[in-house]
Image 1: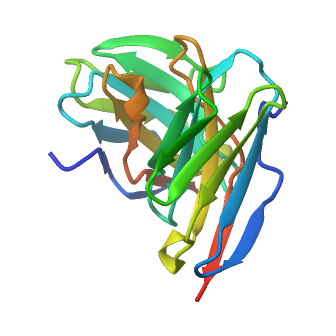
Image 2 (image 1 turned 180 degrees about the vertical axis):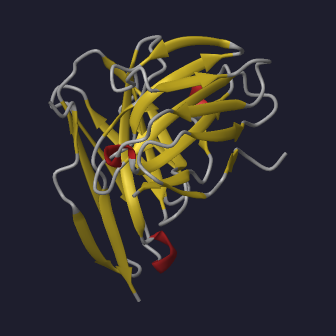
Length: 114
Length: 112
């Protein structure tokens, strides 16, 4: 297990289509986070899981967004009826219980809505 | 309202010299601070962190200083190397809240 894996790396979709991204965290990390980053901005928090429980969800996430972590391992982030404003880098991170180690981020999924 | 501010969008430093990246915050509840480095098309990479009970933490060429009264922290890189060229983000969290609040980043260029 070499790190956090995100798929796909890039996704181009037409406005109105649904997209789903996958994140595989480091296996011994029980915490998983989704962030979104647009150009010139820092990452913005979207949601956080501890094991399979979704403990916090940002107000940034409209009803079109849903995230799951069904078995406490990998997670999926789905965006329904995509809009051009959804174009961003979607970052997944995981962390162990000891927070001082910081998060480990994946390489992200670059979404472009045309 | 930007709770974590990195007021310098970019910084250029000569190889071998010190790089100083600054970060200011407004939320006095923040008690843990982290620095991340980000290369293009990659996710952020954790560099170094500091708890509010400390005023300095050092790891190799990287040192983070925290001035709680001024709500200011800084990252020092000595000596700077061309491979350090990247965007550096300051991030903060409060208590048991797992959510990180990020600055906008500072783009560091280390010139050979």
